[in-house]
Image 1: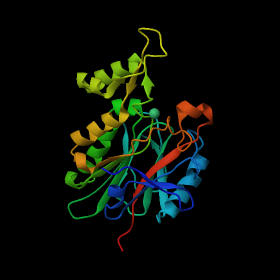
Image 2 (image 1 turned 90 degrees about the vertical axis):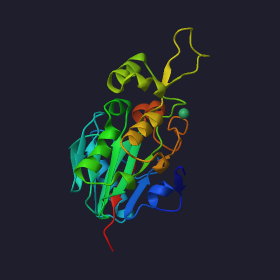
Image 3 (image 1 turned 120 degrees about the horizontal axis):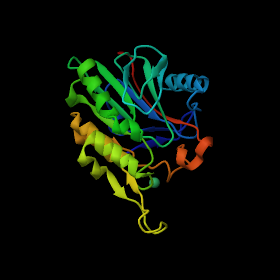
Image 4 (image 1 turned 180 degrees about the vertical axis):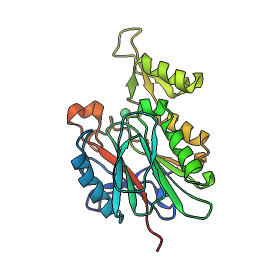
Length: 263
Ligand SMILES: [Zn+2]
């Protein structure tokens, strides 16, 4: 499937996934370090300003965002502004842009339709803790069970994040993933490099792209309808904010999705 294509020609560089961009009445974008400037946790004034600017750029009236807390909660939203604590938002309301913010965590965008044709959209902030809590599967379940999406209509995209090349985790992460997801979670962990570590101290890398692709497929999204950026924010810290590269100085980039009004 096609990956992320970044358009440098607008007010800010904006990335788009070609298949998701072709979904009727669904708009989306992935921002970069070049703006708009989203606040980190607790700096909601920046987030409100940047979210409104991005919504306007995409032709929508307003934006909603969550206080992302690395859990498994999905909220259905119908109005602009702060939506509360959650790691996924869904809506069927035209004109409203859902904003996910990240510095290393995968943001998963999903768009689809009800059987009558009306669009529904959602995003998940799939940090390792939220991934282990099943956030992407919960978001798709909310789209289908609560908003009435036809699973066959769903298209999904996974934005840039810390990749399996770099995303080193401790043994406790694998243990929690195995407890929550079962022994088969082991296939989402790959051996890290051993050259620079003493024998016995090599750490594993958590492949969050694979783990969230798995949640999408198990939730009924066709594997051919899933686009992955496969761009690692740690490898590409110059383009996307990375908590592991920039630390406290890291800003946030966004992946956002919404519905345009019927013409
Ligand atoms: Zn990498």
